[in-house]
Length: 232
Image (cartoon, rainbow, N blue to C red; front, side, top):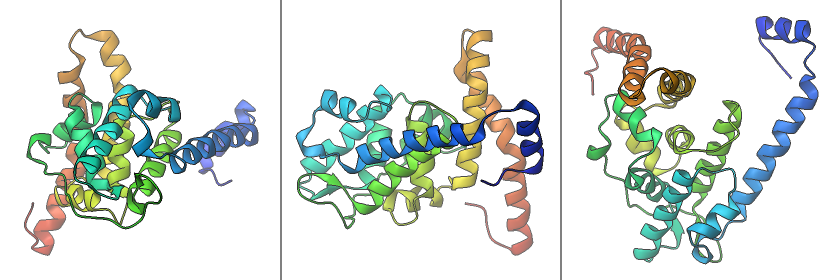
């Protein structure tokens, strides 16, 4: 497995059993992804979905449940990435929405797409793009070293999934995968400290994320000025 030179040196010095750790992380990721692929949403209520996806937070389970409700109400054959985006927005209190706000994207202005997507199977299942997004959600959580899967991981995944309608919507608004992953990383790294040091962590968290993203936004604006492309 490739490691950057500085990290490889630190690992050698610490004597950490990298192979065992990687194997354990891979086993956990495989179990999570297998659970996603086997999920038949039409047969599950929120409690059943939580049991099927035990590593997902309550808010993430609610978001997926709301996505399934939207697809079911529309008589759709599957749950799309647009439904997942709708569920995340409709849940209303998750960290992903705060992160979008810190990225200068007002969640209230986002319209979740309702276009059909291919894929699915017997019963109400995820579309191909939505299944990929859920698998990416699990991968993002694992990559960030988190032992849970939350809406913030789903946000990264929706921006990174290349074929779904939700990803196009979010990227058009400026939430590209790199910036979103960076914003989530900042939020997760700072949230515990801010929560311990202030009684109102949310405003401080947004300030920290905005400050971290500012240089990236400025670089993008400079490139747009050079190329003559107007800012969104």
